[in-house]
Amino acid sequence: MTAAPAVACRELRIRQFRVFAELELAIPTGGAAVVGDNGSGKTSLLEALYYLEIFRSFRAAPDEQLVRIGAEAFHLRGRFEELGTGAEFEIEAGFELRGRRKRVTVNGAEPARLGDALGRIGAVVFAPTDVAIAAGPPAERRRFLDIVLSLNRPGYLAALQRYRQILRQRNALLRRGAPPDLLRPWDDALVEWGARVMAARAAWVERHAPAFARRFAAVSGGPTACLRYRPAADAPDDGGALTEEAAAAALRAALDRLARLERERGTTLAGPHRDDLPIALAAGGPALDLRDYGSAGEQRTAAIALRMVEADTIREARGREPLVLLDDVFAELDPDRARRVLALLEGERRGQVLLTAPKASDLEPRRGGLPHWRLEDGRIHP
Image (cartoon, rainbow, N blue to C red):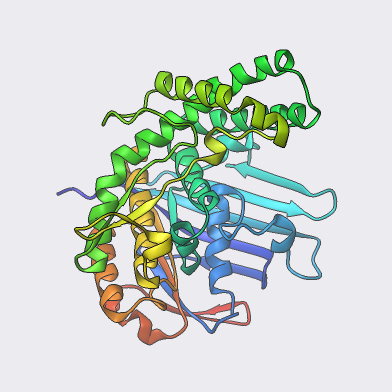
């Protein structure tokens, strides 16, 4: 079978980012394994590379916190190659504390909108903090899904941004006690753009829920779990995908039903900003919410399965292998789960991989397939 194309990071330059004063790396086509003590900057290295994908920290840190202490700005530059064609492109990103100014360029040109530059690399990050996606509040799962869809589904980011703008305006009117006739135009707009977001989320879950269940079962060694979409507006569940029309009707009905309560509370109580993607354990009996009944191992398994499905989404949407960043993901898994995760990743991995670990022995299951680099005091030692 012919290998799918992929994008590899050939060179990465980091200036005044987190613990790094200055770092320049030439990265092999297959990737590298970075070994370093806690606090040495392993996660920050992956964070810098992934910043060139979404132009913000995957750890949800504000840009101000990414600037090295004592510096005025950070700057990142990556040179990437499309393997197979040999085509190259370059992405740069920087942030200045003075004026809180962010600047992004692709091949030396600033995009008209930041959203136009998002997702050029096609990368996915596996990190220990991912457990919050599975075990945390609904906002964590919404953020995960919004990023995946914004990077891989044309039009989703624009719809989401428009919905959020309308939501802010509508909430401001509710707080001021605006009468229904002033709210009505905002209701119409909220329904229109909210329905687009809801339909896209529902389609993604319907498409990828079976793969999530398979990945969960493969990592857990038997027990499985199911992923579903739970819109805040009660939508019909007829076994098919939620259409924009059905989503709009459900959201309109919810706004009508909650109108008095929304005026009392001064906030919008229905819409995609209150959706959830619940994960339930399926062990032959009644489905149990993973957040309440799942073990720590099961919650981490669900998070890894979600990231694997994100990688599937990149393959389908872009027709190429994702660049995979693994941030010490095996440290908190029991040995059996870790072996099964490694087996899955090795079976699917055909693109570039950068992984981190606190000690070289943690990398032995990779069978020495990647060069080992030592990270100390913000410097790489091959």
